Length: 374
Image 1: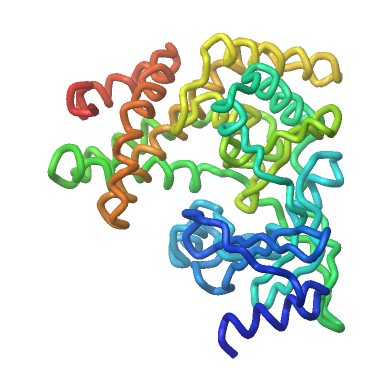
Image 2: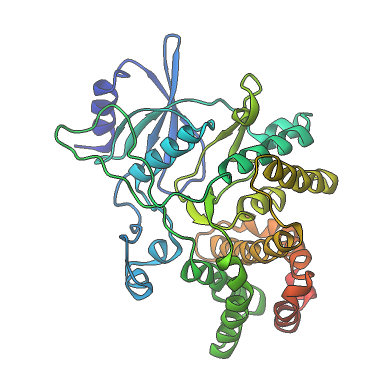
């Protein structure tokens, strides 16, 4: 069967055989979306060919075993696992958040029909004159709701139509955002940014020192409580749903790479956005709102230690993004991402200003001086 034939068969079996299929432009590698319309009904079609990317590591895999499987396994990325997307969506809905309902899914071929939450991306709503502060404070309420309990060890088995007869439902694990994954992401900077900015590969000594410094910085982060981490929580993955109430006004998408990790990760992902500038007053109010919500719900966070955790995990995330954007340009032929690097370096410089990151800041200033970063 061709991919087109598989899609037609899936849509017919799931009750959408007569729908008009309109592709949605995107830059999501092997995954694509289309809008389905059938009279008054509307939904989204996800097309994720299974096996198109290296798989996530099996539970209990060692660091060496993960490295043998490839970068997705090392960094705890879901790859093309459409079943994990469905399981994460189910968890978010069980918590009471606005993740799309999965109407039908074929985990063998990788097609899914899911609820269409609309086009109201935070980035577009704010660009159109929407209240940035209101949206971002609501996004903090989502995080507080997620962080009211520790990260689950396992995700719920997704409930959807179209499961094959006799197919056993499983509870996939929510993998830990562990040292192996975090260091592998930080390594992207030395692997890809050095050739771009310095015209040479990083030396073995530079790579080793960089890792050692990160290992020290990340130690307290890894010792902190673990919560559910969306991992791609930013203004182009959040949808404004003003007709809903409470934390449900923020719609969640693109969460298949979710892990168990730092309470600060999704917060800094939103506030230190690589693609847009967030009003500093809004960012400050958002952090205060999150801390207040955590206290009100009976899960208070020590502000000083949390801000240190924020600086460390934000620096790690921005170092990773520097490497990813250099890789997108050098390996994937997408030089437009280089235009975003000054903003990311600005975020990273601000993160490294925290006193607890002084040794790491000195390494960056010595190895990649500020004038080279621009």
